[in-house]
Image 1 (cartoon, rainbow, N blue to C red):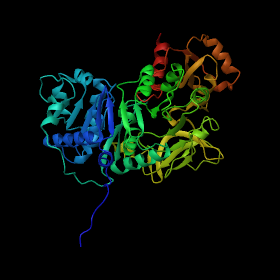
Image 2: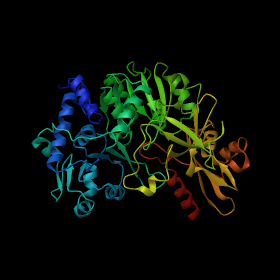
Image 3: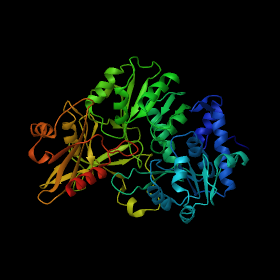
Image 4: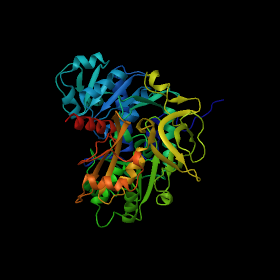
Length: 517
């Protein structure tokens, strides 16, 4: 007796196949005045898989994508896993040195690059080949060199890949590189199973609608797991911008009737500064994450956009879905990042590695189906963070009586001064309470007397004027002596990673440079 199998197999590329089957004529991607339907994007993804198969890409091989936001990202993300191969999006802001460190780690068989990246790697064929790369597919013009060829040419002459390579949920699908804000970037391996779990969890917890019209301006190499993949599950139309520009964002929202976008507090602050008199009626949902949300900013956003729902979530490259805060709690629970998402277990460990007491701070340990499978071929980095009951996130937090989590910083960012522990987030919150301060970051630097000294960096609001001595007095009135910054530096802007987090390592370097002079 024969049985009929109905539905999608548990694999990442099935998300795109499902959308193409149910809504083939719906716009899937809009970019630069051109539109591709779901049927067309699915066909392109299958043709890419065919082209890669002709280049002998097999199950387990890596295919890296190094380019700024552009539509081909979607077909790479879903086309590479059709072969059981592993897609690896790279930070498009990386230098050649940064990229080569990553390429040596993952040793991709094929590298797909944009025009800016071609300019960086031209003339380095020997180094690329030494890193295991057999072909460089260029999305734009390419040099006449060994390894380099045209992406469009390979797609045009390749047959569609109709036969999918069998995979199981535990097979790797994508490697995401960490931001490297405190050291060398590491490749976090996510499986078909963890990404499918993240897609379902995020679409539910963020309140995404079927047919959402979402605007992408954050870098896709970092935001696709909580943004592109869940929204493709919801058969959204992806409107892709090459980079963030606040006025362009508002123009796109109006022109394309955008219903949702994902952001970080840094971009939301800029969007608020140039917001139009009338907020487009289509916009209904803004999700945000990545860094601390200042209370004055979220309050101002909600006052300015009362019809728009704001949803905050907390996650990381290694563990995609941790907490979420619903629209109704945005003002009631300012300063927290919400409660654990569906299927996520969180607990805290104190400095003695024992369970933290209620209301006591501790390192967050997390377990959910969205947990990564480890760092790519790096047991020395994986073993310290993985526990039997989950992953040590490296983040310090505490729960309130309702189960809402407040983040207090990174374990590595805690400052030990005179034998006492200082939490940077506490001082940053105080500084951002000053009427002239728009942003703040606090770091600890070596100090002969205190072990570490507290240094603060602030940016001022547009048109504001204050002196460092005034900010010092402001802190003296509000902070215990050991918590007060030994120096406050007013800077034009704070250095950030590609996903909007403070690059604290660069701030420490600035302190060392100041001391040298």
